[in-house]
Image (cartoon, rainbow, N blue to C red; front, side):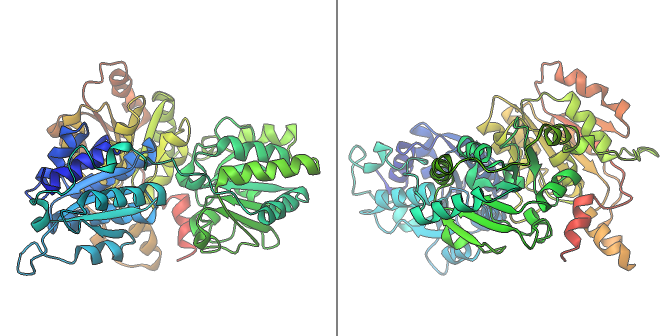
Amino acid sequence: MIVARAVGAALAGLGVRTVFGVVGSGNFHVTNALVEHGARFVAARHEGGAATMADAYARLSGEVGVVTVHQGPGLTNALTGITEAAKSRTPLLVLAAEAAEPRSNFHIGQSALAEAVGAVATRVESPATAVADAVRAYRLAATGRRTVLLNLPLGVQGQEASTPDDAHPAVSGEFAPGGEAAAEPSAAAAGALAEVLAGARRPVFIAGRGARRARREIEGLADRAGALLATSAVARGLFNGSPWNLDVSGGFASPLAAELIRGADVVVSWGCALNMWTTRHGALVDPSATVVQVDLDAAAIGAHHRADLAVTGDTAATARAVTALLDEAGHPESRRTPELAARIAREVAWRDVPYADTTGGGRVDPRTLSIALDDLLPAERVLSVDSGNFMGYPSMFLSVPDENGFCFTQAFQSIGLGLATAVGAALARPDRLPVAALGDGGALMGAAELETVVRLGLPMVIVIYDDEAYGAEVHHFAPGGHPLDQVRFPPADFAAIGRGFGCAAVTVTEPADLGPVSTWLDGPRDRPLLIHAKVVADRGSWWLEEAFRGH
């Protein structure tokens, strides 16, 4: 068996079930080997889309995402998606053919490119080590939660692999993600956190992506400590159903959520970076509050915000350990009262915050649009959101069923990733209605993947919030009197574009135009639905105004 085929067989043996990519001559054989050994290959129309699909798939499936690309331009095309994954610590394996000959027009410093964006670079070094090299790269992605580039040199790929097909260690599946033991916190750190919580009167817990599999443990500790619950944007939905859920902390926080978080005397971060977005540039954390950060990665603690107490350990294991100590110490006083629970139920959701509907003149208020869609679309949905001025509206006015119903590829804040994100999310959660929320700029950047959505037969709802501009730049620079011609564009008929790719489509300028959405939802949903919403664009969104205060 040649090296390329041995690598593909080994990875399939480790449990790789889905692979995204664009196939060229350099990654043809490894991709075919993956398929022959049971993996599903999803062909994207651009490598950037393929990388983002694999990223989203990994986030919601719990598996290592895998993307396969051609040497040179295949990797450079994928680089923005790889950067997003690396910044998000997504377990992603990038299989890239490599032209090692400097005179090849495909030759570039692929390892240097990967390392420059925060990924880990590895290589198949020889026929003798090929399978072991592949297993090592997969293991690093799975257990280290890293984005890993595995270079496959063209000169090595075609050689005979030294390890027989039936003898390589990959088939054991010993490196399946999630198999690592939970890292327990030190007894001293757990005791210190228990002491802080025992003395707290207004604690708030903020959970991030690192806590998405620790809901039960964190909620149990919150019940014992009398804490209110919030999440970072990427973990939205984690505490759905709890009467003490404040939803998202940061720029997306509703007025009541912001008020209650600011009032905390203890803030405990669980697998959350506490970056400027989650803390509103620090303004959501009272200067006198005690800040505790719990994270597996010691280097992440204090990276963005002061941490008065650092606890290195798995979030679930830490919550269990501290709960046991609080059980011994007794119950603290709590601000959890029936009156506060009623206020949270009544006010914490953005759709319950009063606003003046600005629909009119051929444009729909994005809040009114989003609330209407929230009422129309099934609750069991998986929502993926692109970046841009518009993104707070779908993120906060469209509800999600749980933390696996929201996919937010925003660590790099690149526009154009939303549609590909929705494809990966849809394949990871085929039991839910996929919803892609895009701005007009990002929609056009990622439009090639409309063909992928149609070809795969995904029953996706694609909502384009069209303000005929790069809205963030318009609202950033307009107050200074700067010319905006470079960031404003003539109207585009997105409904016609969608129909051209094979979507059903409707243009919306007021809520009454949403009738065809109900018709589509009634079935058979045999093709995607594109909603071209011409939205009011007279001012920046609330979250953008907040974000600009820190720029």
